[in-house]
Length: 374
Ligand SMILES: [Ca+2]
Ligand SMILES: [Ca+2]
Ligand SMILES: [Ca+2]
Image 1: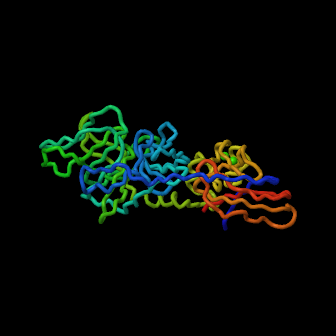
Image 2: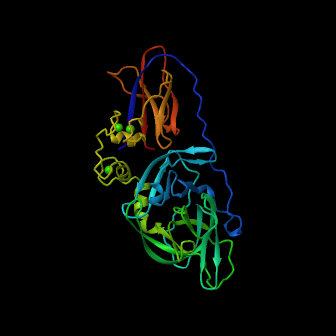
Image 3: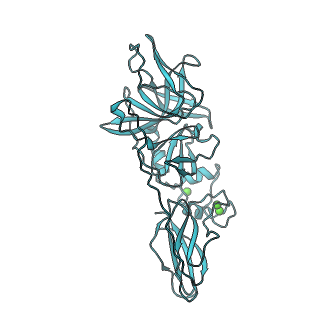
């Protein structure tokens, strides 16, 4: 059964032209790690400098990153090719240093997730952090940073050494199933290479990619560094996404365990650990928690609500909207008899607000705006 939310308004006569809201073309290639020809095809548009660290797209609307990055301060807004993307929602894994972050409109794209992380595989670390040097000695290789700022776009290869369980403490005491990657693939190599990489603070959330048969796949994200001193880091530790694939899929497909219409991730993000009742209106904005989900508004923010905006007219309906929801104007001439008539086809809204034409003629008509999940 498909559920809709409607808002109702009285519509009088008057016709006005409607300007379409342009949608920018987002799929424009940025610079790629062309230092090594084998990685020239890697698309940096799928990796983001998020809250000073990194995050990677796993879906049209979702990024994955470390929980201890997602809980950092700041809005989480991204600017991609000059266009601002607004963070809508964060979902923390209950036990792992893993978070999914949802945005208000479709991201440029994403790579598929790897289903396994075989030991010995080469993995490419891609993200933003502090620039540094890989130093190889006769006995070990390590990474040492060369800058005190961060958010430098960088990448390099590592090798998956072993499966490891990592314990971190932010924002929760997390025990993450992951893998350890080493900086040097050949400890007998005494020469620094320009295509290997280490990690340091602000590298968390960096994506780790495997190339399987020519296809880039996201295998995990960085959460820890391991060193023999405060400046020499010999290994990097990652969350293995293959281990958490069921949880990620549940979020991306809006799994609803208690079948009340609210996805598990929505209840987890806003419920604060308590059961989120679909019929309640937690923020007092007149729309229930279920209606907030259906309209892609925030159930704990009274200012985030599906509504007509002040410059609406009887024929030009300007309303708050989501780029992941569809909208339609319907009308009728009599609220007692007859039925609602579709004015136009259901179509995706724009992030923030949208405009649709209302039905008008010389007599009084009633318009209503519907929103639904595509
Ligand atoms: Ca539910
Ligand atoms: Ca509400
Ligand atoms: Ca609200």
